[in-house]
Length: 562
Image 1 (cartoon, rainbow, N blue to C red):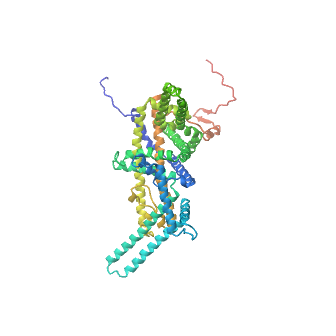
Image 2: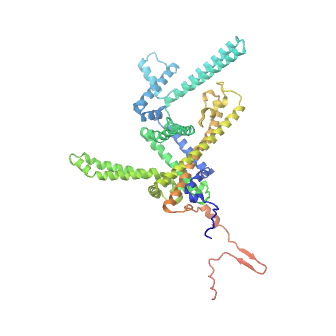
Image 3: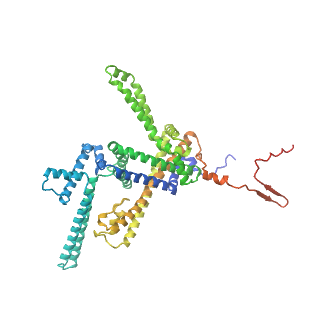
């Protein structure tokens, strides 16, 4: 009847609100295969950057504090140019190192040598960072002498102590003197090592990690737009660190950029491929299949984000060449003015390409992974979707960023709590103090509760040989655990953007979410091709029917009459 009420048995929330598909990205990202590929990408970039730092010329490396100084210059807090600051800072470091060479007696003036010649020789040795090991030995020797003096003074004064309070005060003073000696030695050695410069990748990596840590701290403290707030750290992450590397160390940026792009294309493409099949078919292909797909499409993955930039550069250079006409007396400016509309059109095209690349960059890898296509299709689809539904793309991206930030904080706190509990209970079992009278475990591995962060520090100068080896292995395991946070972030990035690609494709092209390109590898075909012919017999009380595979050489059956 018309008046009968309707009962809603259930609501398909994903069909009603398609953006809820983005909430699947956490479950998809934490899959072991994607985390392993994300970790492989992270470690490949990290160790590749460290190898570049190791092989890079000493005087072409960064000066300690260079990125922070570049940030101050960019903010207008320092009017000195970065090149002048670098020259002044490096000169001060050389002079400090030269002073240590002479004060420690490592270099001495010959009787026949003039003062100017001696100073020039000392600066040459400082510039070449010679005798660095000798300086370290002197620093450690001075530290050990100070520690021995503190212990002897304590033993001498202990004989005259009359009360337990005096003995406790003397012990406290002795320990403070020992700690001060070790701290001063560590500070001196840290300063001396700057004579070799700081690796460019190391400087860039530490600065970017510092900005990420600042974002996390800002969120936890609800500091979004103030000084050292979330907004400032996000800006510094994208606009300070990379720009410093591009403009001040261009050759290193190009070499490292090629390495990064290849790693990103190979492992990122594999993660996108696994996510594409997982989202569409709820099936998980193997890492080997994903890597085979990524290797076959590596040029497409690598060139997709580069081609639009090349287009912009080519158009810009062409406009610059044509603009040379303006140097012709009298007719040149007239010609440029009359044809200026063409330059504006070129600028309009370059703007469209740059905006399309910025907005559709996140869809390029998912396009290749889902469609099995090439870089040109990735560029075409990403541009088409971003310009067809810009606000829908912005909405999906905002949801993914908010959801991803929440899950990132959860994983971050999970790992931090794991480190804190591990440090606490392992420390309860290590009763032997370090040579600096401090907690041995905290000397080998900084207490995460003290720092409040995942980063750590080991005071190797305060450790024996066996303790140094133990600290090295301990730091490797801690670094591996902390690296899974980066691996998760990479996996989440590709997984969430693959979901957004499916949603945008469905919105613009009306293509179903389960439509994904599948390739049947030789391993998948082999069981089917090698399967032996079989027969199936069905038996009843009165009749036995035998069904066999048809023989391709047998004649077709005769048609039945009627």
